[in-house]
Image (cartoon, rainbow, N blue to C red; front, side, top):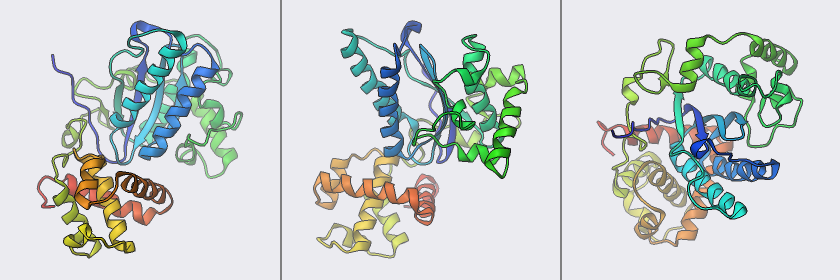
Length: 318
């Protein structure tokens, strides 16, 4: 039986579960957790993903993640491969560490995100490791209550703001929410998804418009099509992009095209470098700088997300 395709759209929220192969431990101590977090932090920054909650168990992990632009598969592949190589070398072992590919359940934001965070933070309690989730240090629960320092790669503001206007009120409401019982059916859905798919919405139905694969719509776009789309949006001529010009507008357009092509098509950095007649390190640096600016500049982020939507619209013309 073929595997179900991944589902991705910009801004999607996921319950991500990664398990040890044959239930074997993936962490033997705090040093290994720290290295896993080190790789994860790099991946979150590189792909502009946001992590809202986590729980590191002995033989599996839970995460509440949002993927604004790139599918999770790109980050998760690197995370699992790098950690497995490091872990195997450390323990003088070979073979798979994780049980197949990760599981990703697509979750509607707001209400379901809060339920997912609670589900993740209560995982050690359900496993009967602790009676109070605050006693389990390898999760983000303590960060939500300001009882432990939140790592820089953890985003808690989005969820806390839904509990109250001030930090004190939000934390008190969050703690009350954590003490409320979880519906049995809802708990099963958060763990397994629905029978129709892996998306939970208010009616527990699959979003039909999102039943796609790992690669978002538009993944078959050529460099030329993406270049035409961006050039039109930037108000420049497409032919200028392949000239020797180093003007700010042309350089910015090249970086946007490269980012879109890398994240939402089958093109490689080498393909883009050849197209623009530039060096690969130069293209890589420009895209990295663009990703960093997107984190600070909401106008720029909105423009690029608009371009992503246009590129993914199969009915549109690039």
